[in-house]
Image (cartoon, rainbow, N blue to C red; front, side):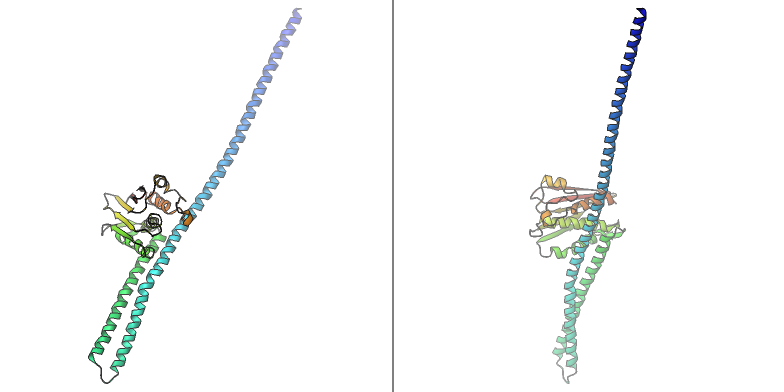
Length: 312
């Protein structure tokens, strides 16, 4: 009987041990299964992250190309405007020179005569003088346009640093957009110290001002069909900081639009070909290339004000 009891107890201990071993094995199996599932999930997340990173890289590259395309499109518009603008003084100069040439020929014919009235000679010389003055003034105008175009085009297509006059830069930008604004009732109000010279990359300021002005033309003044003013005020540098205030008294914008204006590809003018990159480029240039800040204040019907500040 004792031997039977010992056998039963031994069997019971072995049974419990087997149960415990099976339970432990089952727990280990479940743990391994969950670990495997977690590893598979992690692998999937890593694949998804890699895919997202690759997509983000492609989007950034595409965005960069679009930004560059927008810059080149801006330069192209400037070239087209310049070509149109220079036609006028060159055309007038050619016409005046032709008229002067005819007057010279007429004068030679008069001199070939036996008798010439003094009044006819004086009239001929006066005509030649007027033609020469008109030719010279228009060629000077064309030369100034060419100088302005050279500064603006080189600056806008390059980020090289040089010493430049800020007031002259603003005027160059306005000259480059004259063809866009000449048939509008939009006036420019410029406040800038005459002797404000900076050592930097003028192209970045040219791009920012061009984009801000065209933004006003398109949105504030409905493609130039509305009258108004555009103002650019450059404050005398305080210490090592330059502050620029840009404003217009056009349509303004609501708070929701204002919160998104610096986002890439955001535009309220998509139907008319707006890219949504103009103000994003401004923000990108000011915050990265100039290491500064740009803010905007606006209310519907009360125009817009942009404040730009950066170290110089």
